[in-house]
Length: 155
Image (cartoon, rainbow, N blue to C red; front, side, top):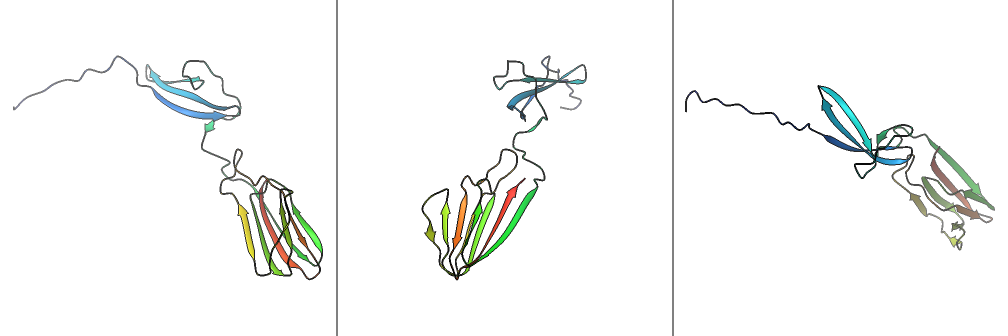
């Protein structure tokens, strides 16, 4: 049909967008709308009705520290002695060159590790609310032992 034209009526209801955000106290809901061409933000608890006032820095909940600072250690033990790694490390690695040192995790029973063995414990996500190893590690060598322990930790 040549010459056909029409019109579309705009909605009388404003468009609203929602996003779950986080602050120092946890997650909350932010609603974005537009009134008279200006953006309007309304923050509520996750129920969508109770007013909420953010505390501290507002951020996307899935975002952890953008550039966490990682501290690394490298300790070599030759002969008798113990290397202790406190709980909270992000990774722990043991490489045994000679002898048969023992490893005790979280105060548990010590286990003998043979020469030529390499073991690693680690987590893949750190940041403010991220993961860390919950146990302490104790690596104990006897005469003739030679091993290396490396760690990383968020600081």
